Image (cartoon, rainbow, N blue to C red; front, side, top):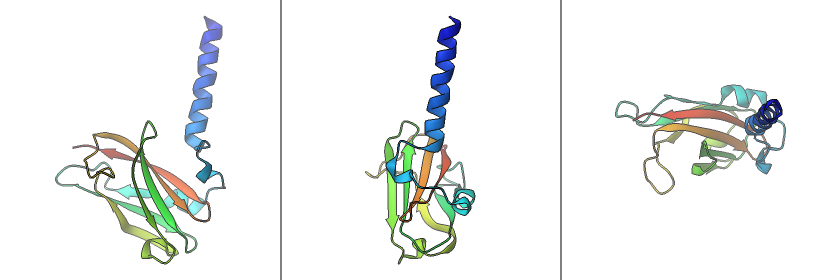
Length: 137
């Protein structure tokens, strides 16, 4: 019984490390940018009701770069994504507050269910950051 508990704990630890580091996604293999990691968030969070129908992303780019934001369920199903080039305002160097908005709908235009979602920002230079989003209707 004790060995099963130890095996379970080891497996749980390995899974949490994989999820936290996101090492199963080949797009995220390069070293993270500290300023991007510290700045990437959304407001309001939680959102999804009449008084807070959308959430706005905040992030800092240390260089002009292509930018993607992808939102996944906790089970890694892609819900929504957007892409901007380094020539778009969203891809320019500097602070971005509210340049990208998500309305809580999936790519088919359907409202997603209440819950926790994982948002990833990816740049063409390989930098990335993550944040969690709560939807409460």
